[in-house]
Length: 123
Image: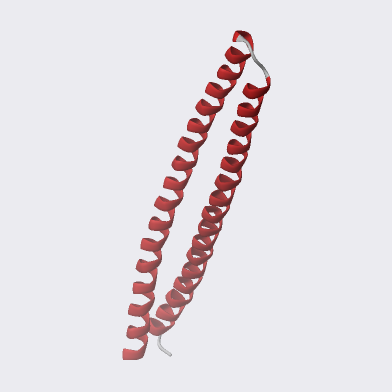
């Protein structure tokens, strides 16, 4: 094997390691995406239960003072829910961007790997 082929072999091996690393990163990002979706589902189920409890409290307590307190709690809960939704959306957008970036990098690496294989087969 001549020096040029040895260099290509070395580059090919380095490219394979880089591809494996990117595939692992992509898998981790996909796992994080799945986890965030599960967490989002759990949190919003909790939010629905919380609002249900507040509704029950409003049925139990009567009078202006209790309505004000319960109304305040409901408003605070709605504000918290909106904030949580925004934060989840931001995280999901970041994950989608990271997945896209990793996929683009992986395609470049795979193209380089194909090119190196062609060069090795041609020599």
